[in-house]
Length: 146
Image 1 (tube, one colour):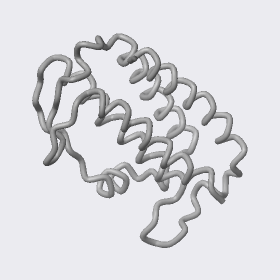
Image 2: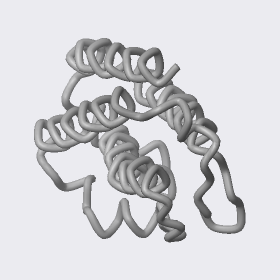
Image 3: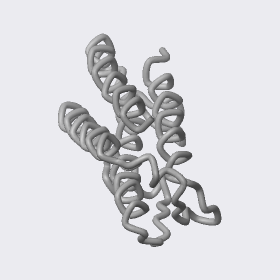
């Protein structure tokens, strides 16, 4: 199962990088409204998600019960994705997600039912992995939208 998820994630990365090239540079920084994220900030959010989730994916296998929760709006602002070089954000997003795919390939099926606290919930590793892809696809659709 983890091999399939890792393959799916790797394919999403590859397809997305191609799709990103079809989006004009000026569209990446445009904010739909002052309180909404630009495409750069959405990709930055996905980078923050990767940074936090890779910790969960590794820690849960080790039995670590550290509750890793992050305030997404604060992280996007603190990392200032809106004013960063787009190529740097893309590279970081790609690298982190390729590492997640590597971790997933080495994850034992027996670990999939292990749990880790996330805010007020205690999801299984399997849920976190599947939800990671759902979450990524949701935000990638936002990036691809006009």
